[in-house]
Amino acid sequence: MKHIITSSLLLIIVLVARADNDIESFNIVSYNYVNRVDDIHIIRQINGGTVITPIFDASCPEEMKGSFAYACKILEEYMPPCLPLKVNVSCGRLSGSYRNAISKVIAKGKEDFGNNDRYSNATMSMIKGVILSELCYGSSRSYLDSIPDVAFLTQKPDLEITYNEQMLNEISFSLEPNPGQKYDFISLVLRDLLKGLGLTSSYRSDPATRGLQNPSQKMTPFESFINETLGNYDNPFARMSNATRGYLTLKTLSREQLKLYAPNIWQNGVSLNYFIPQDDSSVSQILSYMFCKGMVTRSLDDDYSQWIFRELLGWKP
Image (tube, rainbow, N blue to C red; front, side, top):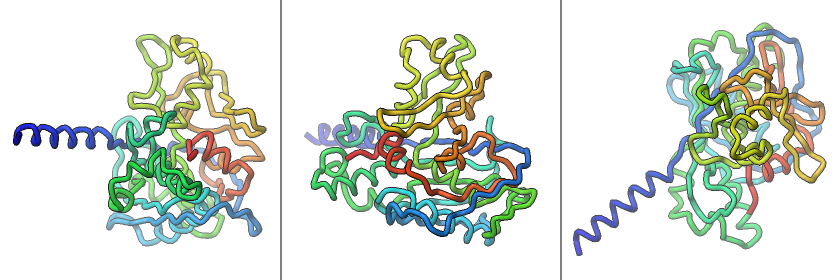
């Protein structure tokens, strides 16, 4: 009996460990300069009251903290209602293929968690958004019944962002929308937070087949949406062809649509990770593939919020 109980406990521990999942992405920017300012609007739509709490470690310069918190406030207004989110912020060296990126974003997630029939890989932000919706609708089917305790929602950060310490001198931390010849930090933070909420993908090129390689982990809602848009599920070469036509249009039966950047020559970490900016979408401008020094993209004021969070990020109760 003792052996059976011990084996059962080990199995539970293994299953819990397998459920934890870090979704890593990098904020890749251009070294070019464009003098363009899209500051936050004085009169704007407020979609929700989510609280995003940044936690800075000792590596963060003091001048970074106020600007980061300000960016959180901008995003809080744009998001649908969600349980509080926690973001750990640090500065350090980035390694590997993306060591020249300006920041690294890790979204905490869960694989095969709860009873979501459509998605098997969910960020903690998505889980928290769906839970609040379920509470409002009087339902508990997707995730609410699977939450073991309050610590599950509060003990760990939902996001971790590391800024490249070798590029800090190229960043303007000013609250004023005038970065000069530097990168606007508030715009960078908004990019990082949106990527951390799930607007990122890990599709890669396969040098052996010259086709498109699917994410190594189970797909997030955003990756699943891209997957359905690409089609040709059993033909990696055809999928690569669809992913290198200049842009990939993401749309549903509603009027909203966005275009992912899909350059003719595939770029790992860039292709299908950023948007072609369009006038009616703030998110497409913040996550523009050509974001560079001098650009200020702080405004989050459009009619895409519900569509992005429900359709692209899977926040459906």
